[in-house]
Image (cartoon, rainbow, N blue to C red):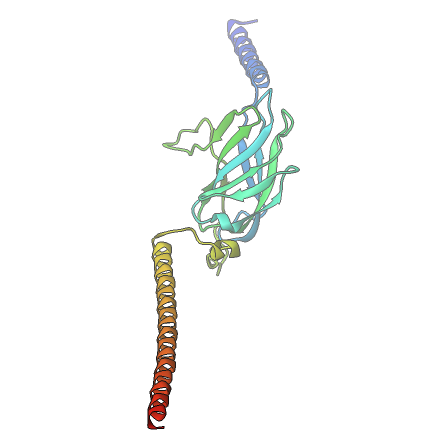
Length: 251
């Protein structure tokens, strides 16, 4: 074998060995846990879209208990409803997104759930920053966004969207939450409530004063009437007595 042939064989052997070593290291290295999102319709301004979320379990001693998600701009908390979730898990809206939580999942079990969104925003991609909580209190934050071309270590779930369909338009905003009857019947005390209460108390006092004055007037009238009656009786008796004495003297 010539020196050139031997060198060629050596290079092939080295490349084959490097490839085998890379494959072995790739298989040996544990897969990094992450959170993902998919949609049944990945198109801007699409309506009634179902989003599927998967958070891979990364704890060896605890299971998931909650997912805290910050919604992207263009999706309001009131536009989201829970479609599917682990048994006993429920969705609760927050000021900037929602919580999906419930009984702890078994250790090593991924958290999978689905939500329905009223309409996707008019954007090229949207991110759903997610904070995962385990039953032992451990928290995993998948909230990082790409910056400067660098891939983040814990990226937030990102959904890429196709361009909106021709003629698609944003739907009207969701109606704001209405006040419950119990709250409307018993408002919390405030400046206006204090003024109203003071006014009501003043009215009540005024009414009591008027009633007292009316009672006083009635009592005074009764007393005066009684005095006049007594004077009339006394006067009549005196007149009768004087007249009788006069008649006696004439006889």
